[in-house]
Image 1 (cartoon, rainbow, N blue to C red):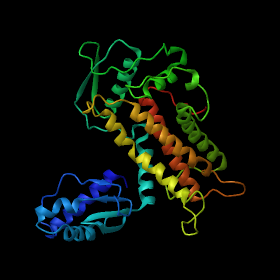
Image 2 (image 1 turned 90 degrees about the horizontal axis):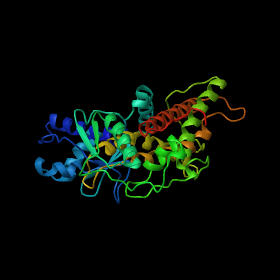
Image 3 (image 1 turned 45 degrees about the horizontal axis):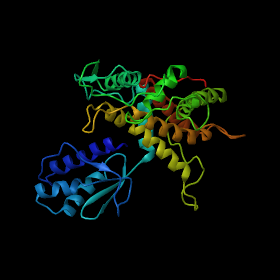
Image 4 (image 1 turned 60 degrees about the vertical axis):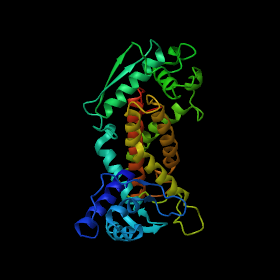
Amino acid sequence: MTPVELSRTVLHAVRRAVDAGELGVAVPSRAVVGPPGPGGSGDYATNIALQLARPAGQPPLRVAEVLRAHLAGEAGVTGVEITGPGFLNIRVDHTAAAVALVERIREEGGRYGHGDTLAGRVVELRVPFDVRAEVLADALARIVGSQGGRVEVGHREPVNLRPVPAPEDPAPLGPDAVQWALLHPAPHDRPRVSADHLVQREGNPLFRVRYAHARTRALARNAADLGFTAEPGDPGDPDGHDGHDGHDDLGAASVRELVALLADHPRVLATVAALPHPDGIATPSRLTRHLVALADATLVLLPTVLPRGEEKPSAAHRARLALAEAAGTVLAGGLTLLGIDAPDHL
């Protein structure tokens, strides 16, 4: 369950409480959900009870008690605790969330994260005659388009997108490395135009992103050779611990991190596309950083996808393969929006 989905769940609980006559308030249009604060617990927390206390004419703790009863019965919620003056701390079913997310990515494919929040909106970008400005504008046009909007690029004053120019002609790097070299740094940072973007090693972020994608595709081929395919489900703990034997359950934590990054992809695209920002035009560098984090989390999972030795393919292996394939799909989709090829073999 993503924060957006949990926000809808919280609002549904409020609506049920109102319909039952337990709260006399107007159902708000939005419920803020985020990580628990100091003294909190669980996976997420919301201050909705404090928000509704005054209009309901009841103490925040009483409102929280009412909402806790309704939230506890919502699908995907495994526990609700009240802390502080009335914060609701919520635990969610990570397995159900992971399965729903993977199924959604499998269904939407490369369009996962696309939306219509900017439908009908036209964004005007005025850029100087500069290769980096052109590359940024081109990438922004694709990202804004993924949210239903349209970008018009012009070369007239006043300019509203003027990144620090490349120190030299980046063309010798080739099209993919040029895109990454000019998009990965923030526009106010000077880009590096060097052969470092071409080397196939861990220190090259572009290589890590493309390698993670290619490895997910290779694993699908390897799994087919072993006679099994992906199936969304419980990936289990890749480290083989159950969390009760003194271990830190790092395998399960790495799976949750990967799921969280996949779930955050639509928000990242919407953030980059939401032009203009109060502090200026957003840039694709936010997306490149997200893809690097996603690639690194994916690479942690990949060694656990295939059975080892005489081990037989299990439901957990099929679930990990489905999660890996979903990560590969999102990595490829993100690279495509940046104008970068995502090869299946690398």
